[in-house]
Image (cartoon, rainbow, N blue to C red):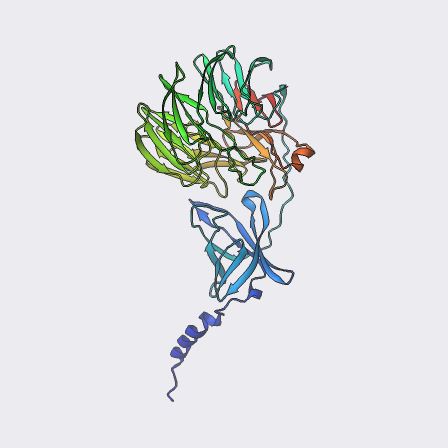
Length: 497
């Protein structure tokens, strides 16, 4: 038999055994220990860690996402088949590369919906869960606080002409409060107020979960008209119960010279005559709506929980354009310089051309819904976030990030912004795989440094019942005062500086 030359023998060895004698087949024992990766999306990366360990005689895997304070989430038992592995009950299929000693695959859609984000793990150092953050900063001066009698989720509204705050609560009460903390009048709707009141000319408009939109005299609270804007929406399921859609908020209204426009959880966008309260038209979407629509030229633009964004003519509701944001748009839409700004549960802050719906840019928030409506100041959009527990500053012209500041909890509400500060409310929770605290935080607008924190400690009952605490309503900055309402039902006036 003729001998093979050495080069042919070497090549045959590579084919049979893999490069440099590396093993083709992955053995469970090869996995034990820590593996880390830094996947990238939209130019932003996030650290991810896997630990494989033996438990009760079985190989199991745990996933850690330090960006959102989540550590050692069990993926379940590991199964190995050749160079492939997977986990159950939470699936995370990965492939072993014997040459480079890596595990690669796509991040689970339970963690990163919509996009197939490639990830490559390599051996890494153990990831140590840190101690809960100690939020130590100056405490603001409290000018006054008053009770409203029920938690406040709806954002606050302010009328400069009468120096009046309008605050709706879970008991269905709209409170008109002067800047000294005195209640001028109250209006009872009987069901929770989740949409921010809107002051337009001499009236204040407010929606209630009783299915009605009210127009009230802003000075006296006298009812001018009411109209049904809900033909039968599903009941809200609290966020601490199974099946919740986390639809914490409700639409406010926007107005042109003839009509007010409001979105409803019954899946309809309503156009209502301002003078009479009569319905001019309605348009049905395919899912519930909690985002306040916006007006642009002769169009009204709305969004729903299936991710549909739609622009219609204000006169006859004829559709002008549509856009798919992929997942729920729960927070208010915002218009700035011809841009429609949209936060999606796809983890994207999206800018569209308001004229034609063309996508201009996206900015990705790792592992976080964007519930917080943006506030634009000097060409920069400021938003809170959900599990990212941060406040972001993003350039409106191109979507690039200026800064991100960590905050104590979920920053779901619209922040308040002036020339010097960004003030954000956060919500805390009881049992949750991460640190979340309820607070009101003042950040320096130039770079996100924390100036002060007004922490809101929970009661034992709140923790035991896994209810949220802190500030779920959008605050306001009026001059040198911050007005904010908490989930205990109190309204506070705080010194900004």
